[in-house]
Length: 106
Image (cartoon, rainbow, N blue to C red; front, side, top):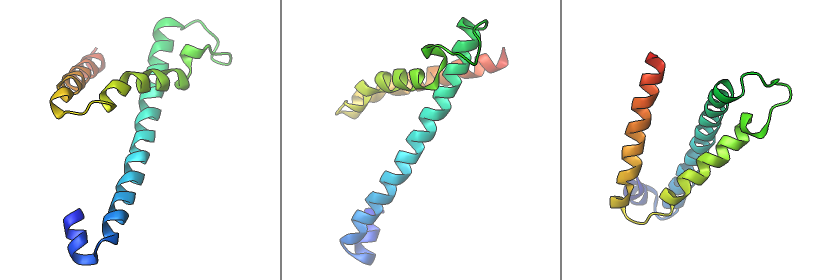
């Protein structure tokens, strides 16, 4: 995209394309954290705190708790510099997908 934009519109297109990718990625991150934060909160609430009143939830029953845990768990992977180190991420993703399917089947 960058090369085609440079050839068609010049140097400024690189900045526009980068800005659009940044906005798109930021929006996808917000969706990712909201979906998985809500999913983890409701799953853990059903498993560990089924008798707690939903009107007065503890911190473990809130989305914020699980978003922070997920962000802290992903932090080491964001700081990796080599693609070879990302093998753990793909293994974790594959394992999570299998666990998700097994939970839905059960």
